[in-house]
Image 1 (spheres, helix red, strand yellow):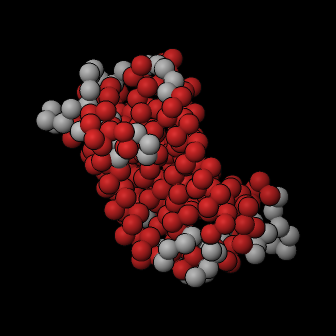
Image 2: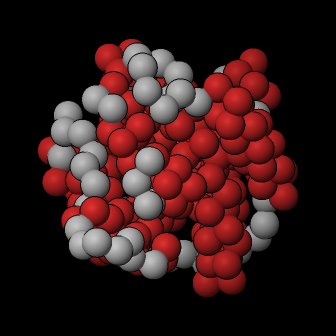
Length: 260
């Protein structure tokens, strides 16, 4: 796992670049670091595509009523958000904190606020790439998204990205790097298997469905399925994501440590 380093645009020259330029320079570096890292590339792109292909062709798992590919793609897009906003960011933050990179960047002209903004832009950039790749594979497999639901899908994705990025910073900023690595990957598997992401909570045994529906993973999957399958808004899913996002943000502001 490679630590994040300051972009040359942040440190070169005798005069600091404008704030927006600093943020964008660091965001490009953060996004490039995520995509150059083999483990993160596997989780961000290879595994979601593999899950999509497997779920579409694996008839033993019920996805609900409707074309399997139409039901599978929104769930895999939700998995992509979790991969980049949560798993990738938690691991990167944990190791950056361990190696003192966060503390270093926090005292550069970029500043702590600029660093967090850069991380947000980087995550959204990677998520956009994932949407293009997974969406392209889905279209090739016969996916027909509901055009009327695209605005709702965009808002759901933004809420989900906020919620999971805040959870990532909470985990990466409070737990030792090795623990972050283990927990982030285990939670990714748990969200995939029992978190209502690809397989909706309504398709799980009844005793689990009520609890799963309150998870941010299920809310993200349900919100995207409502938007892209039915062209509708799942206000309950938005509320769940908003509660998780606000709570995780508040805890992160209180508990986050910039160095070990």
